[in-house]
Amino acid sequence: MPETSEGRVSTIVEDASGRLFLTLEQDDAAEVIERLRETHADALGRAYLLRLEFLVERLGGKWDQKRELVFEHLKAGFERKFQEPDWCIRINDDCFLVVILTLGEYKGALSVAELWYTTAHFFIGDVSGLAPPLYEAIAHDVDVMRIVPIDLAKYFDRADARPFREASAAVPAGSGEAQRRAAPVGVMHQIQGAGTGAPGVAHALTGSGTGAAGTAQALQGSGAGLNAGASHAIHGSGAGLAPGVMRTIEAPAPAPAPAMTAMTSSGPGEANTLRPIQRAAGSAAVLTAGSRQLRVACAMQPLFEMKKLAMIGHRFDPVVTEAGTGFPVDGKALAALDWADREMIDIANVEQGIRLLQMRAPENRRMVMFVPAAFSTFASAKARSRLAPMVAQAAQEMGLKVLFEIRHLQGVPPGRVSEVAALLRPYCMTTMGHAPADVRAIAALKGCGLSGVSIDSDGARRDDAALTTYLAGLITAARAATGACLIQGLDNLHQMAVARLAGASHATIKASALIASRQ
Image (cartoon, rainbow, N blue to C red):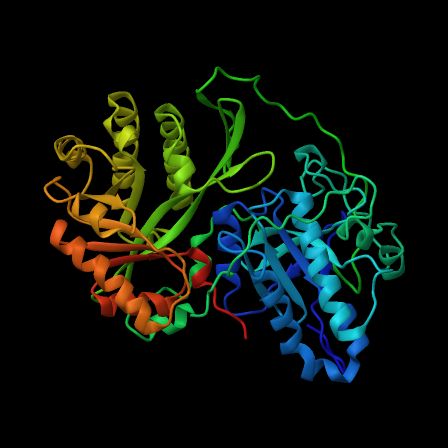
């Protein structure tokens, strides 16, 4: 990375075909790349990189004093509009990575462009005449991202228009900064809603950001024993950059008009049925549920045993969004789906989770495979005969233990829950039941033959005392009903420490929380 009087500027490398690569020089580079792969953000076209070299140039000698304020401004602006599963992180000293899974590619790109414009305007003044230094980010190696410049005038939500596909035309080599900035975009008009036919930036999702205040190293200090060598967890990431093939460049080239390729898909399905129309390996599954299409991706939530604060496995957390709009489908909406629809979502999620674990090195798989599915899925003989043996076989091949989580139990008689738990017992180490964060719902699981209760964190912001009080009531009810309590989807490692003190036996944490925050 070259050193200048204005600060440190990341080096971009260009190969013989004109493709651009950026090396991540931070300690948690492998974890950032792994997170991109786990969420399929790069495959979906939802990972964006902002380069801040223009701010470095304009601020000059003030950059060293302003750098932290710039990144804080970017992070705060992002967190005002987006929450999990969206996330962001500082990259090197002059780049900012943003992942927006809850919007389409174009709306997400507009949101990131708006973030750059507002930040640049705050620190250096009007920049509306410039194209945003915006790129698609694609995981390439354990510490390398491939980046592709985005021209918002030619960027669309169609899969056949994404410029990063291997079959697309190569980025021409030798293009300069002036050519990139001279590209006609009119982005400010589009963001403000004045552009013809340009969709406005969606503001449907509001709330706190990722909340990943803790770091993996902080948990290691508490005895968690997280493996810092996360780079071994990624397989199939391709060879590194070959020496002699690349050359250092000072500025990226503009993206050409993307190659147009036909997108294959199945015709519409029958009403109230769910069937896959696209299941590329390593990418999200697109399923048809009645008259709408849903995209199902699997996010790997780290699972911790709280007594020793040790990471013992991963939970296959389904991330379901509308395929057309990118808006998330929450738990209530999933519970309202037909049983056949939920069954296919569960199976798609588990299949992807198994593939993700198989991509990891054995030492990074840990010990437990935590598999959630709806009660209706486990109760169906057909679905159970497909799902349970598939999980058991994968666990045997990888040397893992299986923990099943039965969801959507509201209104189910205890006898039926106990019957299904008994049917699953030959395929797993134990079964847990899921309950909302309600004491009465938790108490209803008593006598159902379950080994524990899993409860979703509500994501509300509380101080330590309020969080302890809130969790203690739920955990007490869970222990009285089943004997064990697992808190799911905590926002950061500090919350997990509070949950441990409140008496939780296990907890899962959002995967992005293990990406160390770069202050």
